[in-house]
Length: 328
Image (cartoon, rainbow, N blue to C red; front, side, top):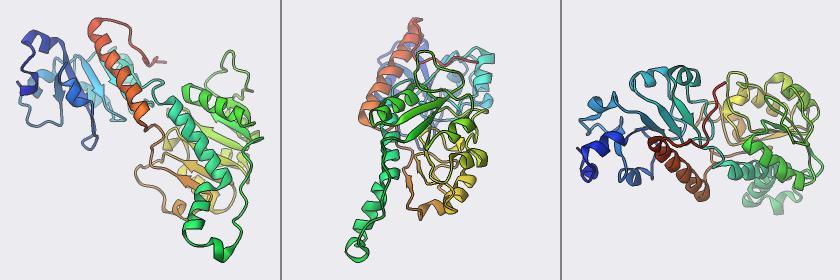
């Protein structure tokens, strides 16, 4: 047994066995704290000789970030009962297989929602008011040489269409309403007690919007939901903001629309093939990009740690889980 677990009795160790499932490159600042309360099984720890022996009896998995959990992953852990996730999205889980096997799954819930909503609004302001482009203009010494910087566009009064009015989308709407924007949305279903106009499909939403903000989960139904038809409907002055998942957008089509000037601009925190970004985007002044960091603040990590710590304890105490994903 590893030295970090020597204070635990064998009975406690068996009852509180925790599998950590993560990418090789992922950092987990919570691991040292977890080791004080759980017998940690880490598939990436080749120095643990008991992994193969114990993996067959593990009941609980902590999935770090968007590490894929496939049917092949689940085959390795036949007694798994619950996956505690730390990501706001859940497209990395094979939810159909989890449902079939009776495995409960949780997500990060609302832990990141405020920060992502703030970031989405920040991207929109940046694209419309050309903040990053103006910064580059000044830093390059262009102001005294070229004179006036091209005008940006007013934020207030814009018609903003939100795709996915969930935890994040509703917060985006609340923030932009305060800016004087008119808000509409599309979602899997109309939200009760929501005054924003509802459109049953994204095409109709795009026709009636100056800006599309993507906040929905990535599913088979939403994969590349923004393609040629939606971009055409959005129009030449339209703006796309994506803080959901890169594959919500047909990236090749978006690049072509931007290059041809057939939409007004884009603010992107996520991409189809992260960390790789289409080279064509790098030279476009009407595109603002960030490296999938909308969720990343110390405050959001604290909220996340509180949530998954609760869920780990709740599982072993037979208490209700928080932010449990409802299978369809």
